[in-house]
Image (cartoon, rainbow, N blue to C red; front, side, top):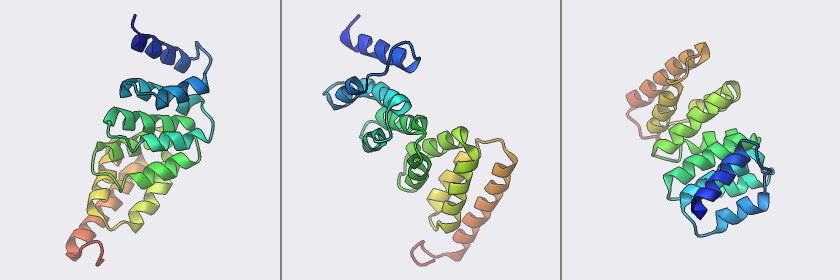
Length: 172
């Protein structure tokens, strides 16, 4: 078994509660020049077992060029149960043009529908960006919930209104 496999096994055991969480080891791995796949596993463990201040380390990794690292950073944030998680992720969906933004919203909806719905509702009411609204709509389309169905109708009406104004978001 090579070193990478041993580290993976250790992170898997930590995540499953078979080994104690070693915060210093995880933080060291995140700072080493090693494959991002190992760092991704470290992030998830840091999210699940780390401290409140570790949220900022995780948020920093969301800016990575590696998509696996960004997705695992989002998983780690949600696992952290930090009060910052939902506000950060739902604000983040409007800033990205790729799948990561949609994934973060879907993940939040799965973890805590009501809290996510409340944040998203405010975001939609204040949004003038059709692409952001379409990403939110797509994420809500994966949820089978009466409130989600009503909200999808509301988002569609908001998109149609923005499309019919003919104004750019800045002019609206």
